[in-house]
Image 1 (tube, rainbow, N blue to C red):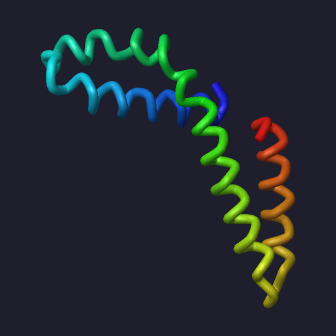
Image 2 (cartoon, one colour; image 1 turned 180 degrees about the vertical axis):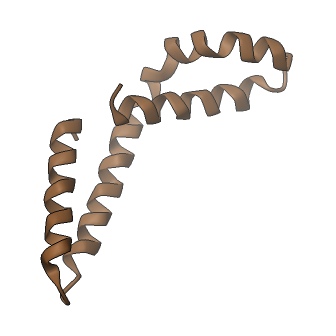
Length: 89
């Protein structure tokens, strides 16, 4: 399971808990939650992918602003670029 899927599943779970808490008994909600998340998490995938890409862009901008000793920050920028590539972002 990659980062996008983990975050999308968590967002989906939070959404289902929020929406269903008013009309579903807590024990029934907990029992049905895994199947509901498995069914619906892909609805949250596109937004999650965009949000993660936005955060990575913001981190890269902040790292680019560092001028004192750029070596550690340059390494971090390369790791972020590699992470973005591996995640398909």
